[in-house]
Length: 425
Image (cartoon, rainbow, N blue to C red; front, side):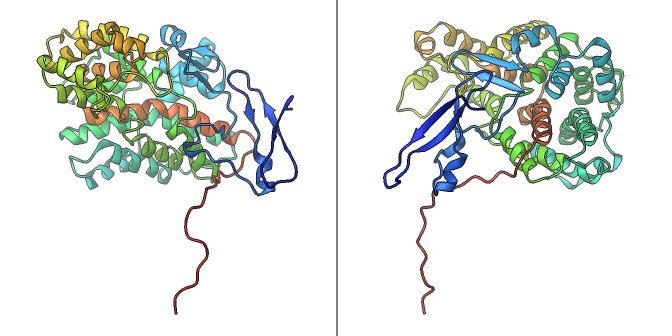
């Protein structure tokens, strides 16, 4: 029940409209404007940046304070004490698992890692130089053609089975995209390995010799998955919810999320970091690019610094920075030209008053891009790994939507076209 009211007066309307005001657990109050349509009015909010389209208990962000909570737990604590699959359990179920519950959850996920063998033939229809995100959109959407035994969205067990399948199969499909692009055979998953270890083996192993994942790299990979697991009602998550509102099957909904994530304004941030480093090209060019970044008339921007949501600092970045330092030290690649540029840019951003005053700190995309570059993951795979990580967030929001009364999404518009006119004689 709303304990507050907002009152709206509109010129030309005789009455004052009372609108309920609701308070969430955290965050700003929201004004319920649903009654306006009965008065012949809609609100106007391009991009929905001031509109709560749903209520959710999964993730909370306070961008001004640099807070990210999953089911109430700070991301920093989860990154230090948990791992990706435990966070998957948390996002899906609302609580951290007991040791027995976690063991059962991990075992179930790992028993779903293989994909139907017929899916391997899909890849032959793509050019070897096809963008991996194009392949991911196609293959994930096609999963419904192979796993149609659990597509009843009104059945909680069916939704759970789909969640397990998606969490388990995304690393397999992602690694297949990479292997196909370089002409190497696909590597089948090994269910006795950890989630991140298994992914690295499928990416970099070959049938010629056994692959052993470096524990430092596996931990960094797990952190990349964990820190990107969910981020509230962003463009791709909202897309998944909107697609889900139509009753579409979960694989189609997740494919729609992948398509939305593919946009450079959303999921391409860490890819843009590497493109920027390549544009700078050499350490000697850094002062010139810093000067350009400070020039409001110059279109050049330092990618990976600041965040459109976090106006203070990105709470994930501190964790990712530590992992980045560990990876670079482990691999001994500090002399790699692009990584040297990245480290110098990081130092400038943390010490230069211009960046400090504007809170343009290195964000999670800056560090994750450097880590993946150091590990040997090509830039074209960065957004694929983001999609792999975010699948748990998408499926958790999709499941939450279907677990309570819902309705199909139907945004309205401010029509600015022609009035009705007659076809000329």
